[in-house]
Image (cartoon, rainbow, N blue to C red):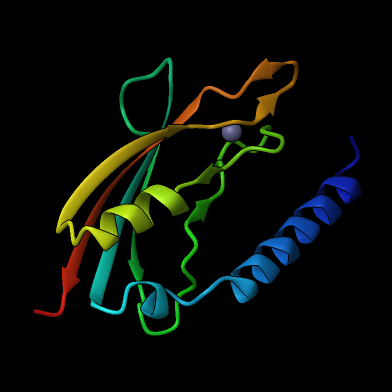
Length: 128
Ligand SMILES: [Zn+2]
C-alpha cells in the first residue's frame, strides 16, 4: 500500500469518527448526575505482559459525546479499535465510582487477527 493511500484512509476515519461524535448524544444528557470521569487506558500485545502504551484521558463531561470508541495503536492494524460505549455507559448508569474492563482488538494485521488488548480503569464522580 502506498503512503498516500494510507494517509487518505486515516483522514477518512478521523472524519467519520468526528461525525459519529457529533451525532452522538452528549454524555451530560445521557448521565445527568455525572460530574467527572477519568479513564486510564493501557494497551498491550496479547503476547507481551507489560503495557505498551498507557495514557490517562480526562473526559470533559459538559461537552463530551456519550461515545467511547478508542483506536488501536498498532499502525499495521486494519479496521481495529475498541468500542467501550455500552459497557461504560452501563457502569455510569449504575453510579459505579470505579470500574475496569478489557477489550481485544477486532482488527486484522496482515492475514492474522490483531493481538492488541486494551485495558481500562475508569474513575467517576457523581452529584450527590
Ligand atoms: Zn488492532
